[in-house]
Image (cartoon, rainbow, N blue to C red; front, side, top):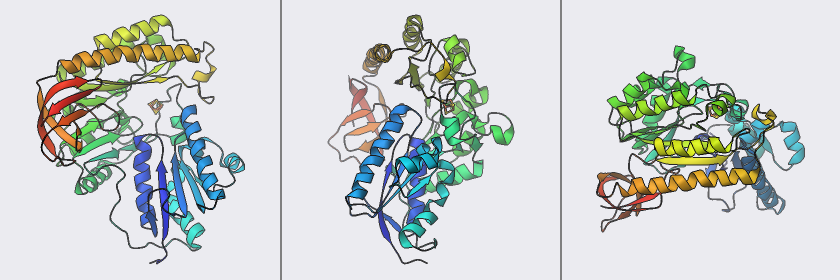
Length: 430
Ligand code: SF4
C-alpha cells in the first residue's frame, strides 16, 4: 500500500451524467492516495470534468481551464487534469497546443486511467491501491443519480453526444441493482435513473427496449421514490407504462425531452416519431397515471422553425400540461447534420421565442399550482426550509418552501399541506 498522499480539488461541469462520473473518479482517486478538499485549500492538483455538447458549454469549460491555468502560473496549483466530454469532442493533440499547461487530458472512455496517470505524475511511482476512506458522495445523501447505460445511438440531427460519448451500452440488471444497493446503504431514499436515453436500456441485451425489466428489479428495493429521467418518446411502450403504474415507489413523474411538436421539425431532428405519436404517448401516460408530473425540454429556433410552429408549441403546452419545462435556444454545432440546414433563425428571434414559450409556461404553472392549495402530500426535506414532493426532481425543478416550527432533517419525509403558490414554487406547512 502506498503511504503517499496529496490534496486535490474537483470541479464537475454539465449535467447529472457527468456528476455520476465525477463521483466515481473522486472515489477512485481516494483509493489511490489522493484526498478531496474544497477548492483553494492548498491542493496541489485539480481535476476538471467537462461538458462540450453545445458552444455555451465549451465556453464555460474553456473559461474554467483558463482560470486553473492562471492558478498554475501563479504557483497556487501544481497539476491540472482535464477529463470528460471536452477532450472527447476535440483532438487531444490540438488541445495540448491550445492549453499546453494541462498535464493530463482524458476522454470519457479513458477516465479509468486517471488514478494511475496521476499517481505517476504526482507521486512519481506506479499506482498502488491505498487504504480507501469512506465513499464520498457529491450529492446530498438522501438522493442519488444512478447511471443505467452509457452512450447513445439515436443521432438526433442537432446533437453531438453520440460522437462524444460513443454508442449505447447498457449496464446489466445486476450491475445497476448493485450500484443502487451501495447508494441505499449510503442513505439514498430516492434514485434518479439517468442515461442519454433511459428507454434505450436493454436494447443491446434483449434486442428491444426493456427499461421496464430494470424498473421492475429496482422497485423491489427499499426506497421512497424511483424517478425515471431522460425518456425518449418513440421508445415508450405499454410495458413501461404498466410497470410504472404497478409500483407505488416508481414516482408519478417522468422527464421526457420532446424538443418540439412540429412533425416536419421532429422529422428533420431525426426524433423517430411525429406529433400524433407524441400526443398518443402523453395521453397513454396520463390515462394510466392521471396525476403524473411530466418534465420536458424544448429547443427553440431549430433551422426552419416558423412562427406558426411556435404558435403550435404554445398551444400544445396549454393542451398537454407539462409540470416543468426547460427551454433552450438552438445551438449550431458544426459536426452535426442540422448545421447544414440553410434556414437559420436569428439569435434575437430565438431569444424572443424562448421568452414567449416560458412566459406562457410560467402563467400555466402558476394557475395549476394555485389549484393545488389545500392538498396534503409527502414532502422530502432537502434543506431546513425547502423540500419536494414526488412531482419535483432535485436540482432541475421548482420545489416546496416550508413553514414549520419543527427542526426538519434533510432526507426525512413529512406530510405537508400546501397553503400558497409563489412562481414555480409551492409553500407548505408541516
Ligand atoms: S437522445 Fe438525441 S438528444 Fe439525447 S443524447 Fe441521444 S442523440 Fe443526443
